Image (cartoon, rainbow over all chains, first blue to last red; front, side):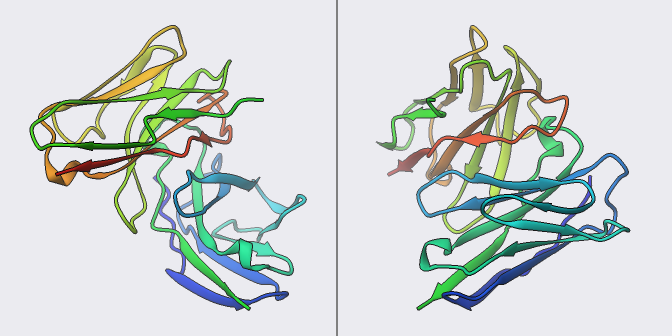
Length: 111
Length: 115
């Protein structure tokens, strides 16, 4: 199983760009990288997924270097409503234990 | 369309009682997952279903925990003889398939409090 390491917490201010980096040194060839966001009293919500290079959608960008040993979730111009826990997952399928959530990064956006 | 629905949203029970937690996945999703999340912690995998079968039960904490799924739809997680350490939020998720990394769609969970 690929193990991931993320910062436990981060602080930012409204309007700033936030980058959260996840390390996954033993990522396997077929593994995908997926990020989820969790607000209090809610289940996690899918944000973005990628395999290599860069992926962008309406809420975030995901940067993956050539060696794929890390990935960076980029949130442009954060607002107070982006305060949440962000999880990085590395897996090649959804078989049970292969899809393991770590403790995540608690992002606090300050006014 | 409808998302993953869990019921009840909150459950308070006395130690030693049995509880049943229900999950209604998104229609057509063949995979279904149960996770447990203690206060301020990450998600702990419990069990997953592929169709109505549970290939991996290794995450269930003890034999007091069991789960079933019927009709490739509704799933029930049952906890027998509840203990205080069972207090947590139980989250259910479904995905289109397990054969590729399909995004998981989560419900908002059932908050279980054992007194």
